[in-house]
Length: 355
Image 1 (tube, rainbow, N blue to C red):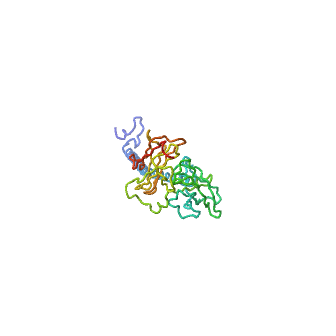
Image 2: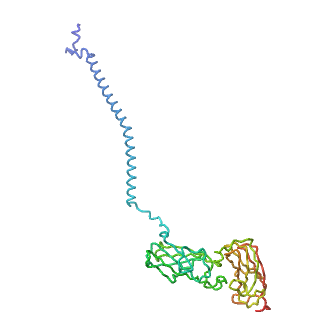
């Protein structure tokens, strides 16, 4: 059979050129498909590259936006806090009251003329101390109140005696007088009798009534022998000693014994011991202790503040409403709380002693 005959289909239909040689058009078709597939693959790769290129930029952009958001939020919070939008912390406590400014002050003196500064020492023998006050922040006619302390112990309210405010001042200014504090009977001495200031540090506070935030507090020192101390009473030149020690029922104005003796009748009200000391540093203390047959009388023990390196000091033993027991007594003088005395002497109470 010829090729022409074999080009017919089994059913007698003549084959088309495509059917007769499918490889020709078939190869072309496969090449086109391959090209199309390659084109699609290239497009997919291009899209992948674009997406891959966009991803890092998206991450970086997201980070930048996040940082900007944080900064923007912080700025808004700061703005709100500055504008008062933040709720205040109600657990915080306010600062303690303080002097309004440097013009608030107290100055003390023993004369009605105000000195530039408070003297270093005010004599205990003065019968009053003037307090000159300046209270910035208070009106000239503001109602004032005062209180005071002696050696840290509260003395309570302090009356403004002879109060003289200055109505023409810009703020509360003026003066008032301070009288010595009242003392229980028996606490006075020959150097600081009743009506005088007991020695020690006095603190005074002046404030506007019902306004504790407008206040000023200052101090002054009252001591016996102030003139001698201020004139250079001197530091001790040697160890502490007691050069004289006497017993008597009376003392003179200088604190020295009157008619000293060593025996007393039981009916005496008080027996003094007076002694002259030297070599004691100012600011130290001398302790006087009283001893009987049954031991020390702690009630009679006294501590004496020393304001000069030498001088006279005294203490006493009271009968306390009855007769003193007719026995022998001894007195020891110590430097502060030291156990060993720097002086010791005795006296007797006896029925045979003259009055």
